[in-house]
Amino acid sequence: VDPANNRVLVAHGTSVVALDISTKAVTGALAPGLVLHDPLPVNGGAEVLVTNGGTAEAVFFNAKTWAVVAKVKTGVGPDAAAFDAHSGLVLVMNHRGGDITLIDPKAHAAVGSIVVGGDLEAAAVDGSGRAFVNVENKNEIVVLDIAERAVVKHYPLAGCDGPTGLAFDAAD
Image (cartoon, rainbow, N blue to C red; front, top):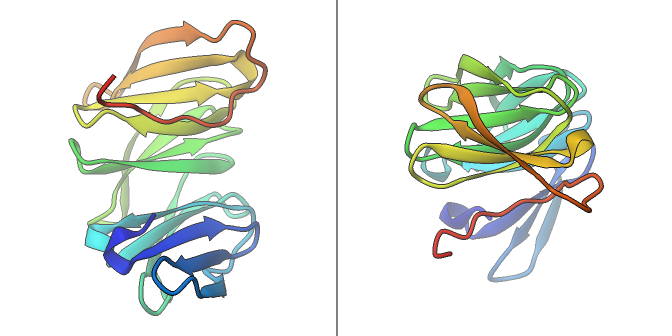
């Protein structure tokens, strides 16, 4: 969801589609690329970061014109992305690389990484400097300390085969 621009953004393989929440109008073929994932509004909604698995990059687009603003190299197979307001960083889960690229969205620069191991999928942040990432091929959730750039806990997901979605419920 892109609240600053009142729309929902969906990556659709080789482009991004925008759905205007008020009018329900759909605009397609935005942000062209290869193996696109997780359009993420950043910088107060002025830009949208989209992970591009075909080029191993996080690409920043102007949220109004969809012109490319910057490209940042990531690890192998960038997939989901999450913004951590506590650190001000974007976390890009590198699915095939097994690591997370940390990106400063204001500087359009990679500023570090966290090695996790496995096939990384989605992430959720808690607003206090922790992130939770599902590791698809290990059927587990890992907990990260973003400031320390370290894995601090593993939670096995017994009976789960290939977890791919994740959300954080702050109230519970």
